[in-house]
Image (cartoon, rainbow, N blue to C red; front, side, top):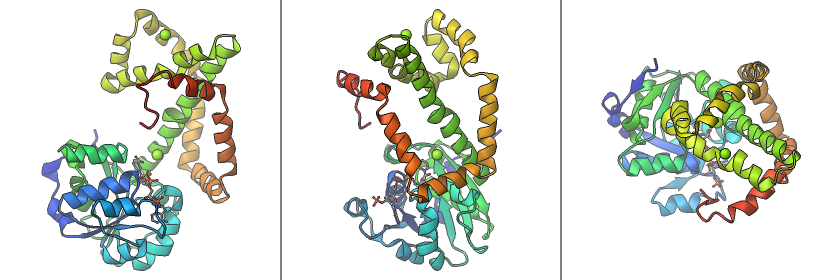
Length: 332
Ligand code: NDP
Ligand code: MG
Ligand code: MG
């Protein structure tokens, strides 16, 4: 069973006794910086020249300096810029300002796990990753609650890196909900696998294939959209609240029977064998290398895929249909 840590297991005074730099002020960055500040922690935000988020951070009462200045001032440096540019920000602004005894923190293990960032031996390397988007992390904190986090230590130079990570997690409300101990390897590999095989890749491909099957058989795209995409939310909400069991309790017996007999014909042994290959390519670094090559090579294929899918009948149909549904907020 997973090891769980709560408020009583974490000492907030540890992080209150440090100087924290939050590099980046996006989804996670704003939530961490504001909640740490409200927890009585000395925080500065590090942002690049011309950053779009700088004005917002200052408006919200935070002191914004360059990433290099933030790293030089602080002794706990949390890197919350997009994963593909972290190595560059680290080399240019953080590495030259790291001292023995500092701690380098992450919200995702990608750059450490695959060796794009190699911190010196004298610094602690830890992760505090909320299991939710930044706006939820911040809102829960303000409401006196928290989003569960996972925490890990990759390098324990001080001998106290995990206590520091728990203290940081307490500062953003994580220990109110519960913090699960993991490793950089487990977090990174399961995160990439989940988003590729199930959450984003698997689900998008399933929805598209179902939609195409119906429209190619002559059914109206609007009807196919409702059946294959729109209703997915209702089903996923039920799973989220009470697992597969609650979903099956709520749908009709006919739908439940179809689930049992047809599901395994769609996600077959061949699909699972392919999932294992996907996982192996994540574990051996192939995926990370290919993605970084694609990113730094100008995102050519990425933009092609994006363009192709935006022109798909599923998407053009959905765009029109969602206008009929006043409660569907496209921003949400
Ligand atoms: P965002 O894309 O939301 O935010 C990026 C921030 O970094 C922006 O403030 C951006 O500024 C700033 N930035 C961009 N370039 C630089 C630079 N060179 N120097 C300093 N700041 C820069 O990132 P996320 O919050 O989504 O992700 C941050 C980390 O958190 C990642 O490791 C991610 O994997 C992890 N994570 C994210 C979750 C999420 O819910 N999004 C959940 C859990 C973990 P500007 O406004 O100018 O663009
Ligand atoms: Mg991810
Ligand atoms: Mg139906």
